[in-house]
Length: 175
Image 1 (cartoon, rainbow, N blue to C red):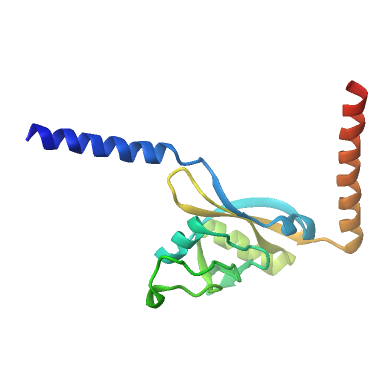
Image 2 (spheres, rainbow, N blue to C red):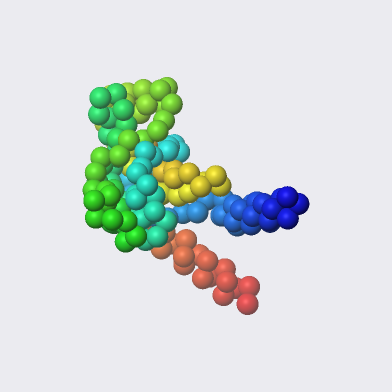
């Protein structure tokens, strides 16, 4: 009896160490293009309803948020066009659709706020990054945003290049 209790304790220690090694926000995908195409006003963190093979595929390989967007569907916020590749370890019959509509898990007040903003103000809901939190739950960061005009995009590029040049000049002056 004492021997099995000792092995059980050893097993629980191993499990605790695995959980302790998880990164706080283990980011799996960024939507870098969204920050260029849209003026991000506010960000919201939401959960995603995923199948087992989807979670496994996200942990294993690359996910694409490039063409993804969120919209309302039957008083729910759904994520469209996010690409999750098929899981290599799963059987063919258990595979998920790569670009299916995925439900976002938000509080009712947040859902109503997003739906109202989209209908009244013409604002877009854009996914910014996909990550696993410290508990290992898949989350997505949504940006409430307005589209940028071509001139605004040029100004953003100009500002970014100026900041890089400033860094170079400051670095050169301090050496």
